[in-house]
Length: 240
Ligand SMILES: [Zn+2]
Image (cartoon, rainbow, N blue to C red; front, side, top):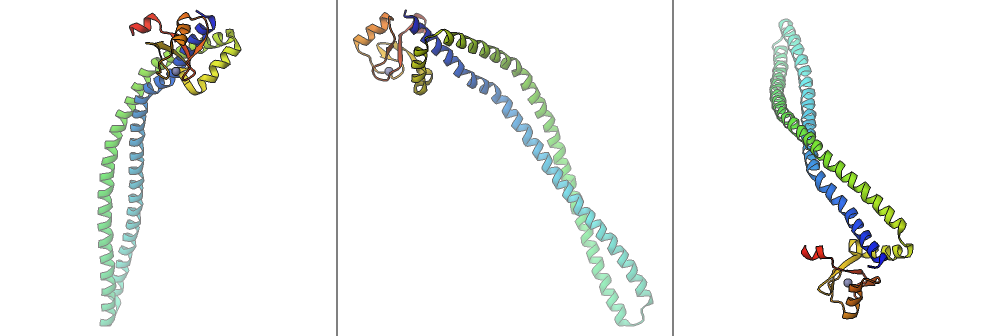
């Protein structure tokens, strides 16, 4: 076989496996990403419960303060009631007292409502915290299980890149740039086999003259239809 052609076939196979690394890494990391997303969704749910609890406690505090003020006011009113003389004054104080009592009732109800709210939010938060524990455990488990796989790929990647560097260093630079030019549009189908006298890049039939050149493997032949570099299908590929 033509030396340049065999180098081009090798180079295209190296580039193909380089292209294959990212999808392999992505598919391995997909499960981890799903688990991490789940974990962070739970974390933000807990954060928003915390926020709601904090806000409810703040409101509760304000109501407590208001209640204390009202209690003070009621004490003052009863003192005044004891010393006023006229019926009109008694009536006015009575009215004020009534309003203060209503406000106290309202503040008490509000405190009860907020307590219930805080309790239920705490309950939800507890549930989420349990879920978070599970989710974090899952993240760690996945992380540990894929670490070896990723390290293996990283090793493979290094050796493939080293092979590429050696190969391209040895190759004729004109041949290399010819390949790179086609690769720009053809990607990892720059060098394709011919099967059943058809180019396996564009799937068009090639004529007998081109086909016989491909079979001879004496020179670099490109597909007359698409321009990809052609080579004769190997025995093992026929079996596949
Ligand atoms: Zn073609």
